[in-house]
Image 1 (cartoon, one colour):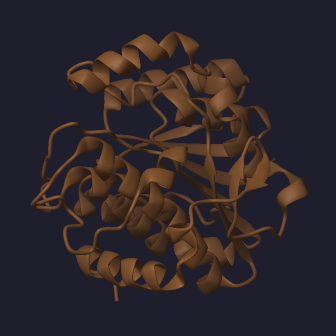
Image 2: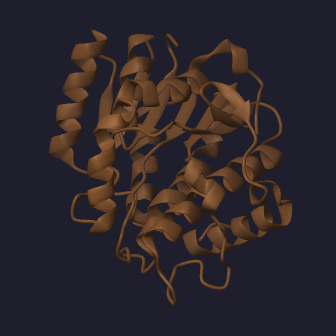
Length: 278
């Protein structure tokens, strides 16, 4: 990974921070994207200390804001001439329906539209840096997901679990559709990291927070959770492999709906409209 530039979103803690640390140890220049500057600085210092490298840097962006995503890309392009790996890791679980500043349901906005927009805005530099890689962190929750085009933002019937599962299915559909559109030069894959002990579900999330707290001691640590992510970002074994879903470093079969190309194309159109992309 020497000389390669990587972006990792949601890297202030958990899988993102562990993945950034792992790639930094390999010699990559890692740009971590965090919403909170103080937490981001703390994570950056830890990544540098644990990796023994000084090449990591921090960019602050709120991925719930499309304006902030555009600025992130502008700032990145002004400082870096290449991008070899983009890891879309940032995600949320929200028990209650919340709207972003763009008036979009937050789970869908952060978990799906943010990586959709960020990836599309960075395609130019990814293409010029080819061979390059895109890694999308999904979840086994996608098996329970369904893209409800009639109520995609949960306006009529919101459920935290349904919204999260739908967004994780959207990650897989986006991965597959992007792979079909890109062809060679850029690979794009997604993964289930395992049941990882992170701060995804907050304690104020009612019954969800309580269940998460009870199960946390039995979950994987962040380093193990980041293993497949790092593997897809760096391993020669998956060079040229694209449009696949991985679990524990192995290709796996995703949900039936995830292979529906008509659903993927329609989701792309809806996503492009909601993000203002042609």
